[in-house]
Length: 208
Image 1 (cartoon, helix red, strand yellow):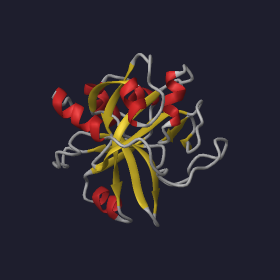
Image 2 (spheres, one colour):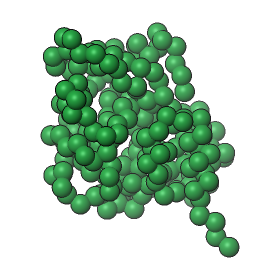
Image 3 (cartoon, one colour):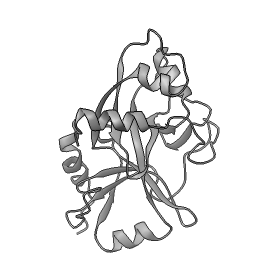
Image 4 (cartoon, one colour):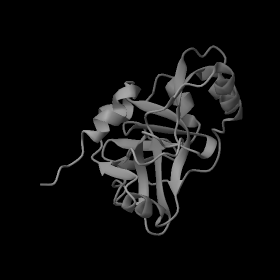
């Protein structure tokens, strides 16, 4: 999804990088999240007409009976933002910093909050491993690391996230709005946005 430059600028101006972690951080070498859907892809079916989620592919971060479910949309981009702008908004040194990062729509919840989905070769103060090879970070120190050339191998900057109350996602899946497929690094991290939904749907298991 592309936004007009003015709308992207407004989103960046409102973006919150600093703040508490999305949930209590675990050590970087902790086992991956064990929740049922964490680390898999949630794919909207053609039955889902909510424009916020039409043809979306969501990388699931957590899913449990107590707190519900949470994930990041991976196939809607916003646009490029100078790294210096994000550093300045986070209160970090920005003078002389070059380059930019691409922002993406992560979901409608806390839509001004930046969350970084990345490969697990980076670990910051609040980094949480989601599944083998994948982690998330919301602490602004990751911006400084990237500016210093210590970036994770793959990273996706998102604004907001998709969230469901306990039992809500199960009900939506029962109604036929979502399917779950195995994750794929290319779908999660590559830039072929217009084909991600088709590729994810192609990963459905067919029962005979």
